Length: 390
Picture (cartoon, rainbow, N blue to C red):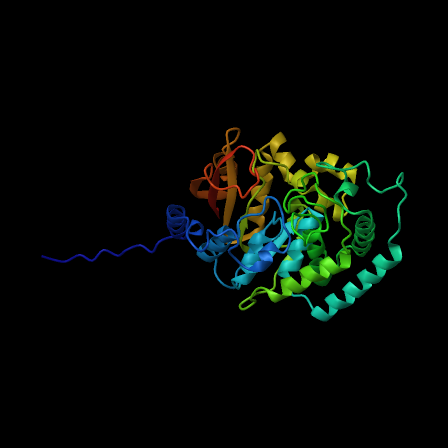
């Protein structure tokens, strides 16, 4: 009897990717301790509060399980940079792009190394600018007294504090955030703008969404609170194995002009039926230079509004992703399923011209803790869509 040795085929890239995706969805490792902790992760993930931020532990495992050290990872809708920052922390080259001025500033602060001497020099310039440009506004001529979503802007602050905020806002608008040091200082400014603890410049509100303020009005010196946040940020966190990344400001549909040849695209598009990012982050967007008219036009500018009008906008999105990726490049989307839209199913259909759908997984989130704030609209599940370039 002759023994026949059958040669085993080497698993394809698709097979290996699918196997990893199945194991990831079966285990959901970010839900295990210590990763399930509310404050797990590098402290700079919380450099600035942001409603709608992806949980850092999810980004951590997507990077760890599906990419390799040295690879280039792009998030074309990076928000405050959770995914590209986690990529940089794990020795990958993280690239974050966003159309929001606020998101761009916070992402840049995380992805690029800051020079402490330059930070100190800019802080001195900022302090001098505030001192020279702080004015006592007459009651009938207070800036933005007729603008606000949860409350009018001046209502959140002591009048003197507000005057200093107006001056500091002008300082950063004029400079246009041209360095990582400016981005870092401005991110700290954004973080202390409102909240419910003594670090915040506002009257009592909320650190994520600026609910209408309550309590007494107390003068708080702006430069002091920014410096305190900067000092605290520098004391926390480790930077071993950190690979400096890149930040891009602009529309994701313009990315082919700015970047190419990336290994993986990992991103969390706006959930189809969730709270609008620009209304829940409205006060920090105002600090970033938004004017009242910008909020009216946001539905037309951002993907969040475009996808509600026509989900087929993602056909162009997938075309761009395909052009940006290397051969066998991967796309992983973290999505939100609602009663109105099964995002993973709909986007999988639209992706097939450019990608092979490798795996789709759902995570029930209806019973998860909301951390004291109603956050996701009618989202019933989080979804992961795994794609590989055709």
